[in-house]
Image (tube, rainbow, N blue to C red):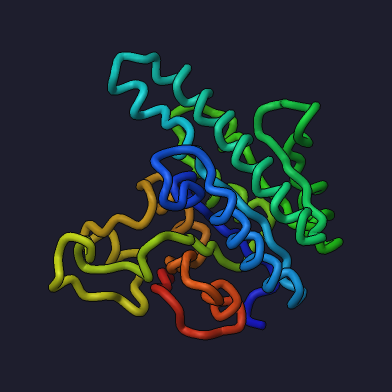
Length: 235
């Protein structure tokens, strides 16, 4: 296996399935099955989930809400999603730990780097909730930060699109897909992979990113098995 330890980044919107908001039990069960196939291969898995299916701080701020207040609400939303995914994984008999950047001791452990790494070494899936614990930072930034801290080999960003395109493939039929692309090319072409803070942090720490379609069955296992799925962003 080319990767021993991965960090999987999922958007909160991905958990909605075909719903307008909230969590689709079928979609989250599908994700749990995909993650199980990787865990069964001995890959150490950490996960960061967004909270956009429940609340997005930026959207709240645009309508007059205090941005800091809105971001804290978004952090709590990521913990809710983390609990949902934890429950789905444990139904598959996968041991998990939910760690939160904001203290909610009754439902999640506090984030402690060494403890997280120990859980991973024991084969447990670690879900990181609460973002970075700070407002004005996205869950993309949280994903890159946690990946660096736990010394992950790669960030796998699961989306509904099968990679990075020259333009939005859902709006532009002439959009072309990149099989691989450098960090510099992404910036020069103005392509949207992650927010700038997260992307720069990944680049500075030489942490590759793979953008792929998480909704296609078997894709996650194919990536960790070394198959060319999605788009790889590297130096």
